[in-house]
Image (cartoon, rainbow, N blue to C red; front, side, top):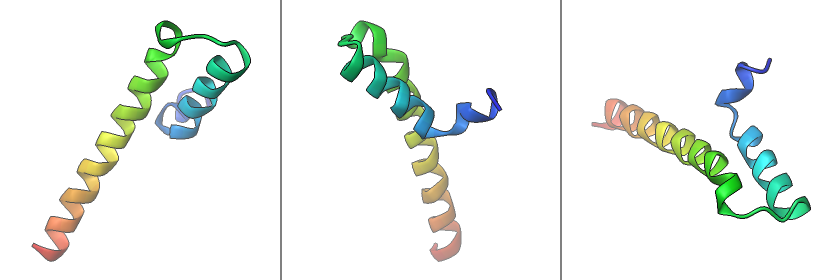
Length: 57
């Protein structure tokens, strides 16, 4: 399950929220969570654009 959670944006969001809200950490501690959210968002956007173009293009 640990490896399966790597493709879930909720994992990165929960880690980010915990680090910022409860611990008060700054960007130096949460950059990997932001990078994970950005990478997953970019991958999902790319897949959706590919599917949209394939379906309607």
